[in-house]
Image (spheres, rainbow, N blue to C red):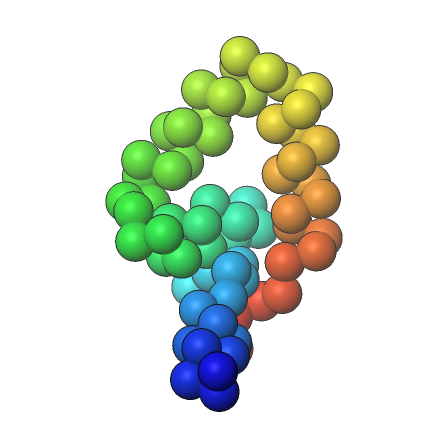
Length: 70
């Protein structure tokens, strides 16, 4: 049980402050799920055109709530 809790603490979703364009949300998602940063950013822009209100609100909320990576 202790091993599982330590693993979860190390694998947290955070904003990536090194590779950020706006606030680091897409970079943090890409780092967490081990995806391409460019692919995540393209998906975010496409989803912004398809669902502008939902995507915009989700991005702003994520930018405010996600902690910065130390």
